[in-house]
Structures are given as structure tokens and as C-alpha cells.
Amino acid sequence: MKQMDYRYRLADPELGSSELGFLSKCIGEGMISSQGRFVQQFEEEFSAACGAQYGVSVANGTCALHLALETLGVGPGDEVIVPSLTFIATANAVTYTGATPVFADVEPGTLCISPDTIRPRVSPKAKAIIPVHLLGQPCDMPAICGFAKQHRLQVIEDAAEAHGAEVHGQRVGSFGAINCFSFYGNKIITTGEGGMCTTNDAALADRMRLLRGHGMDPNRRYWHSVIGFNYRMTNLQAAVGVAQLPYLNAWIEKRRWVFSRYCELLGSLGNLLYFLEEPQGTRSARWMSTLMLKDPHGRDNLLDYLSEQGIESRPLFWPVHQMPPYKESSKGALAVSEDLSRRGVMLPSHTKLSDEDIKTICNVITAAFAKTESLRRSQAHS
Image 1 (cartoon, one colour):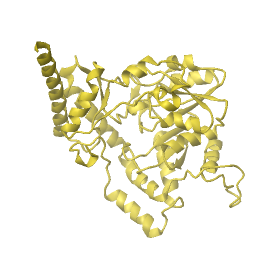
Image 2 (tube, helix red, strand yellow):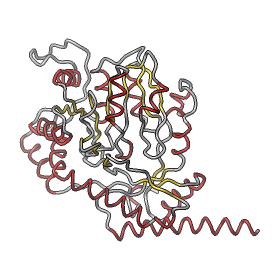
Image 3 (spheres, one colour):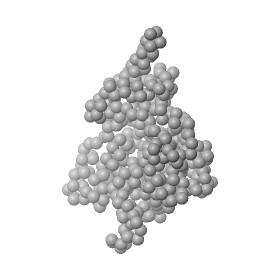
Image 4 (cartoon, helix red, strand yellow):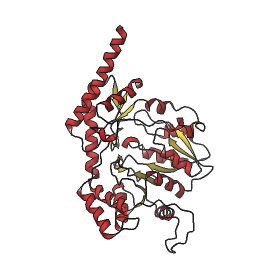
């Protein structure tokens, strides 16, 4: 089923008159590429919203990860510890540098890495850790940063899905040496494509700005002292981000409400499914409300049934260490990631959902389980 056919979409960005007004200003001023006032404004306002001093905008979230790694000097012979249960871009960005991603398992209640899951993967070659705040749930960053300092490892937050998430009142994007965000169309804040690196280190911010613009010397035009990249965000993208940013807190609250309603309305199915934890001291952005099936064998059937009923959903990510580019180099099984990836179903989670919408979706989920149970009984008596 094509996305346009879905009655209830997985993601549906909020776009309106504010975005249109700022885009019109870009066009009216003739500033549509990477030169323009909205780029700097978005960098300053977004980094401030994260509690970080500096923001460096880029073309997308994968560029943000690659730029962060290059800026920190990660390269051939180095190892970078990443969770296997993540979108593949996290691992690919490491590979782009010539370094090797080393896959760690995740905690079963949060889908996040921790010092306990990282520790077995640390070797003398390890140079950095990329904790991923999966689905908007933040990792235990104080513990991870403390572990990293003890082992002399750099920390790069992958906060692509976690705009505004918090740990003990501190927002993600302010813990690591460099922290990375995505503004893809399904993210909490979107610019269509686009990304951002945040940091509290002025020297790192300057280095990132140099590398993202082909390595051109800021004081000597068209003089290139290093090999850089074309990773710049356009003024058009930044204008959309500036328009979106004032709504960040309200949109997080709405997503948290959507998640809470799923939990409440599906609570009677506790013998069949469960929802992920929000450990004390953390505050999830609830980017994507995700139910976990106690019996993983029914996951694909549920996905198909939801699709038939006009409800878009999707499975959790495949563990990256099981995929062809990384399977041969992976260091054995990661039992938690492999198990949980088969259980997760991401549900419509955007801010346009009404209470009636969520009730309808939950009724369909309940009917799906009833249908499965009826079929099971029929087969048992045949």
C-alpha cells in the first residue's frame, strides 16, 4: 500500500503559514542556498534549545555523524562503539572514515546502550562511543560520559530521533563532545532534509564549519588547506527550521500524550504486548510510539493487518550487525538486539492525531489479536 493511501500515517509533519512565510522571505531576498540569515539563526536557536553553545548545520543527519567523527580525528585503525539496534547510518558514518564500527547490545527496557553493554566491546583501538537515543528515549548519558572519560573515549550523541529529550533535566545534544541531529521529514523538528551538530567546544565548532564547506579557509577565499565536504544546509531548509522551533516543546508534549493514550487504551492486552520503559530521571521525546509483542511470531501479521486497515506502521530496525555489509566483521551474537528487533511495531505518532484517531487505531490492534486468537482456536479444533 502506498503511503498516500493510508488513512493514518506513521508521520505527518506540521507545516503551515509560518514555514511558508519564512520560505517566501528567502525567495524574495534571493537567498536560497547556504548563504542567508536563517542558517545562522537556526544554528543559534537550535543549539540554545539543546543547552549547547554552538550549532553547525549540515545537509542531513548522516552528514552530521560523519562530520563529527572526522572533526574528532576518527580514522583507519580506530574502533567506534555503536549500538547494533539503530538505523544503519550510525554505523555507515563510522565506516566512511575508515574506522571500524564495533556493535554493542542494548538494554531490554529502553533499547539504549549503557556502560554495561559497552564495556565488553572496549579494546585498545576504541576511540569513541556513539550512544543512540532510539525512538526518542535518551541513554543514561551521565553514566556513559563517566565511563568514556575513564577509558579516554570521545562521546558523540546520535540524537536524530530525540529532539528535546532530557536526562536529569539536561537536554540531549549537550552531553557529548559533538552531538548529532536529523531534521528529516518524520522527525519532531523537520527541514525536509537537514541536520545539526551541537557542541560546547568553540574549536570543534570552527573545525566543523571548515570541513563542511570544502575546507575553504574562512580568511582566504578559495584557498583550501584541508580536504573538506559539501555538507552545508540551505537557507530554505534553515528557514523551515526557524519556523518550527518555537513549537518544539508543545510537539513533544503532544507526542508524549499520544504515547500515554496508546498505553492506556491497550492496557487490557498486557498479556500480549508491552511498552518501553522511561527510567527515572529521563524524559523521552516519544518520537515514535512503539509497542512490543510478547510473541514475536505475530509481528509481521500485525503489520500486515494494520496496513490492510489503512494504518501505516513499521517494524523496529534490523540489528546492523546482521546485515550483509557488517555481518562478517561483527563479533558474535547480540541477543537482546536480535530478540527485540523482531518484537517492535511503530505506530502513528505525529501531533495531528486526535483522541478518536488513537481509539480507532487501538480498536484495530485489538481486533487483530482477536482475529489471530480465533484462527488459532479454529486450527486447534480442526
